[in-house]
Length: 295
Image: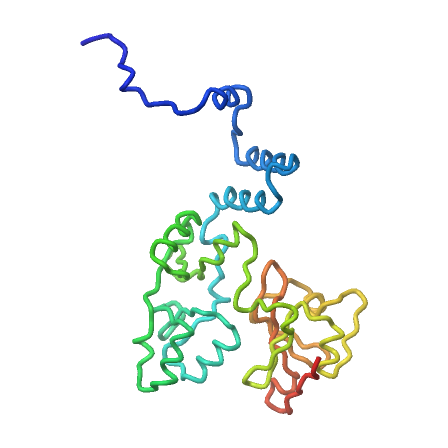
């Protein structure tokens, strides 16, 4: 056996330039993610990158340690559809939540049998003889331990935008969307509920209740519904209701304030984005709905 050194051609080619090699010798790279994040902060301070770029890069770094269970919508807060629900009930759910996709269950919520696209309901309206089962898309199931990097790769590869999250015992733990994953990188994404401020903040629903933005001023809500909501410590209705509830509101929770019933429709970042609002007596089917005043 020859002791001759390997030939030049058998060695992997180092394509780094001289200056790059020298820089790496003088300034070795970070040894941990925290050091890497500190390096990004320094880069921003030195105007090498902008604040938004730094935040996105930090999001990519932190996401490497996150799983589906970290960012999923927990099962009790899922807006799921009963396969046997009548069309009108399905339509109300789509309008009230404004989601584009819904898990569909049969008999019990643990038994997810598919995903219903909101746009597919139009086919039922035009052809009532259709069976809703024919409209269902296949549900994708992932474990709570699924890494967000891998999940994002799968979302992009199979063009699914929603997955059902399963716990270690095989039970439904929640759901996660591609938006939930991307928001870990780019921050909050405008979605179906996000409407520009100039487009308004109070909208009528088909059941004579109203959808109200959590950012709506207390004065605006008072004027619209003919009540006197007064609080010098808060400017928005979302802040006031959260204070009155005494905790961070969760989707589906309700609170009655000055004759109005506020139902939390949508939250993000610990703040209420949208309420469903109706006079409390009207919610009990005993009163005439109140029509908000025009702006």
